[in-house]
Image 1 (cartoon, helix red, strand yellow):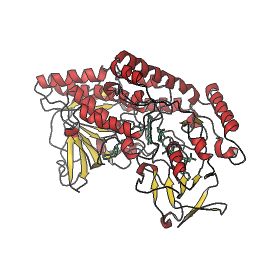
Image 2 (cartoon, helix red, strand yellow; image 1 turned 90 degrees about the vertical axis):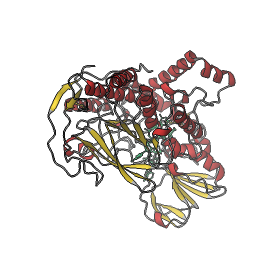
Image 3 (cartoon, protein in one colour; image 1 turned 180 degrees about the vertical axis):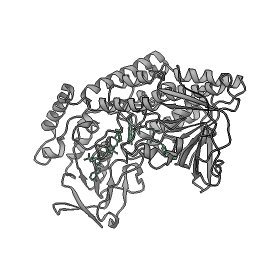
Image 4 (cartoon, helix red, strand yellow; image 1 turned 30 degrees about the vertical axis):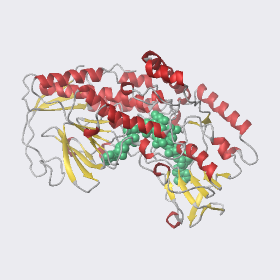
Length: 555
Ligand SMILES: Cc1cc2nc3c(=O)[nH]c(=O)nc-3n(C[C@H](O)[C@H](O)[C@H](O)COP(=O)(O)OP(=O)(O)OC[C@H]3O[C@@H](n4cnc5c(N)ncnc54)[C@H](O)[C@@H]3O)c2cc1C
Ligand SMILES: NC(=O)c1ccc[n+]([C@@H]2O[C@H](COP(=O)([O-])OP(=O)(O)OC[C@H]3O[C@@H](n4cnc5c(N)ncnc54)[C@H](OP(=O)(O)O)[C@@H]3O)[C@@H](O)[C@H]2O)c1
């Protein structure tokens, strides 16, 4: 998968900078989920030593640290859910469960010596590009309450799309007397044995935790707004021989990864709007559900979706239908009206008593990075740049925000393949950009302490966004279903709209002409960032020097 162009280019640039007595760029990475750790690994491999990974929680792993609910696990075969540059070859089963994935994340820290670069329990509050110094000022607060402003040549936001739990504002929710939690904040202290449990939502998380909860609970009511297309999960434990081969024969492991990649990639055919593959898949799944699940107790409306396949996430499970068919489980399609101290009441006035209330209601997803005010050139904020919905060039960088990169950013989520594949491709671009940044600083004639900024041109940014939205019009996501992929106005902000192999090609090399590097003479600071008292540039307003060079790049 790799062709590590970015890594090799960055290694060369860092070596050359050191030889010329210049400094390699310093980088702040926000988030220590898989994307942040992948960034750390690649920076370390490139020879960058001055980088800090800032993480608000007290551990690494992001998604896999948060989602400890029973049944939590991957729905992508795990060999493709590890970085090709830091692969894990000894997965115990085809679809690994959460503890094994979290262990992989922790092993990455150990294997690549990331621990000294980690600042856990530290929240990034805001970030601002300081034009005078060409650096990012990032204000952070530690769990102990101490605040400071960090400074680096570049910043990488690896904050994920799925980690801010969304809980519906149900009337009476505050009055509920029993324990209540979101799937990403599971309360393992509560014993569900024999309890009356109410679950709101039936998405990807719920279909994983409902079966184990159903096995424990005395009575389970699932409040469902939409049903899902659910395919069987071709899971199995790896035998000893196979594990040995995967761990010791690199060619075998690579071939296995490729097979997984291409078998997932062909599923894209079903995600195209009104495609024959989508219609065929939808019919097959529906036929199976009608034959095996629909009954007097389980009416069609509870299990047969009323939207095209893929419009919401296509789910895989072997135990969802057996779970909802248990006599102690009820799927409720009536909307919730309100919550009482010990019950959930639906619009038809029916009361379902509940001791515990669990939300599998997903995350705030379309307002990317909204919790961190980010200011780029000329005091322009990311929020204002994204007034009409989040967007980024290849999901990675935004016009007017130099030396700033996003991982798993807008339009890089998938419905059919591994997110880590996408993150790897993004890192290939980030490293190429950082290499250009480093080379520009070291170019002949540039003052030793000159500053440089690399950014996407406004033209390339707009062109890429128009292309993404044009391709999006041909996907199943623009169909009339509700999903976490789109804003209230219907703009699909989260998903990549075509084959991932196209993304691979698009992210192979930075395109000449799409980026520009500006090299500037060093000057006194200008008042751009208001970072409080600790900011070196908060109180002065001096002019910025003109560029020594401002040119499109040639790769
Ligand atoms: C339950 C679940 C299952 C999934 N399963 C799959 C799967 O099978 N296959 C797949 O490809 N994808 C899956 N995904 C998507 C998954 O999110 C990605 O694959 C991947 O883990 C994202 O990693 P990330 O590092 O980009 O984001 P995250 O894992 O969300 O990590 C972001 C990190 O940034 C930190 N952060 C955020 N804001 C700040 C701040 N202001 N200051 C400091 N730190 C901050 C967060 O605390 C978090 O640790 C799943 C998602 C969920 C929720
Ligand atoms: N590896 C895996 O298998 C796995 C597991 C978990 C999560 N994930 C990833 O994480 C994403 C999010 O999964 P998720 O299940 O946490 O969230 P989700 O897919 O967004 O599902 C949320 C569920 O809650 C329902 N809901 C939301 N608001 C509601 C309300 N106000 N009232 C009633 N019901 C409400 C939704 O109904 P509607 O459908 O009608 O909106 C949906 O059924 C997935 O799409 C996937 O990418 C992957």
